[in-house]
Amino acid sequence: MIAEISEKERLDALDNAIKIIRRNLPEYTYKCQDTSSENGIYAAIDNVEWTTGFWPGEIWLAYLESGDEIFAHAAGIFVESFLERIRKHIVTDHHDMGFLYTPSCVSAWMIKRDADAKEAAILAADNLVSRFQEKGSFIQAWGEMGADDNYRYIIDCLLNLPLLYWAEKETGKGIYREIALRHTATCIANSFRSDYSSYHTFFMDKKTGKPLRGETCQGYKADSSWARGQAWGVYGLALAYRHTGDRSYLDLFEKVSEYFMEKLPEDMIPYWDLIFTDGDEPRDSSSGSIVACGFLDAADSYEKLQEYEKARKYRKEAKMLLKAIYDKCMVRADEEGINGLVKHGTYAKKSPYNTCTEKGVDECVSWGDYYWMEALVRLGGTWKSWW
Ligand code: GLY
Image (tube, rainbow, N blue to C red):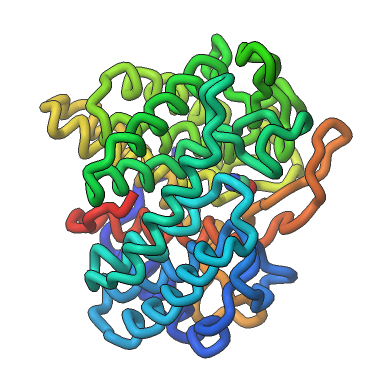
C-alpha cells in the first residue's frame, strides 16, 4: 500500500520543480517546449503544438509559489506569442484551445490583469465555439470542419471546456456555456461504457447526428481504456460539476474514477493503457497527476457540499498518487541529462490497433510536468484555479 505524500515531500518536490524551471528559462522564453522530451531533453520549438500552454502554466505556478518576479516576467513574454497565434490562426484548426490558452493566458489575466492575455483567451474561446457541429451536438476535435474522417470528438475535450465557462463569465455571453453544456451532454451519453471505462474518440453520423462508434487514436485498441483518456474524463467531470453544479456529473466522476483506480498496478503508476495491469509495458505517469488534480478539485466540491467523508477519500487518494510519482518518477534538480520535471510519461505509443504516430514513450511530457506542479500547488490549499 502506497503512503500519502507528506507536506515535507510536497515542499521538496516544489523546490526541485522550481529549480528546474528556473534553469530552463533561458532556453524556453522565446521558444516553447516540445510535446515530450527526447532522451530526457525537450526540444525548443515554435508555438505550434497543442501543448505549448503547459510550460507557461508551469512558470506561472512557479511564480505563485516563489513570488519571484522573474517568473512572471518570463511567463508574460509568452502572451504576445499566444495572441499572435490565435490572431493569425497558426495551427488552430483543432479544439485544444483550452489546453493552450487556459494555463498561458487565463492565468496571466487572473494574476496580472494582462489585457492582451484576456483578448487572446476570448479569441481562443471563439475559435472553440466555431468548431461546434450542430448535427451531433459536439465540438469537432481535429482537422477540417465536417471532414468525413474527422466527424468526431474526443474525451480530452472536457479539459477545453473551462475556457468557455471563463469566457461566459468575462463577456456575459451565454453562447459559451451553451456550447460547453451541449458538448458535455454528448460526451457523457457516448464516451463512457457500462463499466465506466471510456472511448478515446467518438464518431457521429454527419447526416443524422446520431452516435456511430468509439475508436481510439492513442489507446491500445478501440475497446480498451487509454489511461490518459480516462484521466481526462476524471478531471473533466470534476470541473464540469464545479462549473455547473449538476450533481449527475459528480456521480459519474465517482464511477469513472473508481475504474481508473481499480486498474492501477500496485505501485500506482498507471500503464499507458489501463488494459495493462502488470508487465513491462510503458507507464504514463502524467495520467496519475491529472487524476490527482481531478481528485483535489472534487474534494473541494465535496467539502462545499458538506460531504466530508468523500472529500477526505479523494484527497487521500490524490496524495497516494502523488507519493507514487514522488518516489518513482520525480526528477531531482541535480539529476543530469534530463530537463523535465517528471519521468515515465507516454505521449503516444503505437499498437497494432491504434492510429497514432509513436512519440514520447517513457519520456517527460509537457502536461505531465504541468499537472504534477498544479497538483503540488493545489495541495497547498490556496490556489485559485484557472480551469
Ligand atoms: N490531448 C492529447 C493527449 O492527451 O495526448
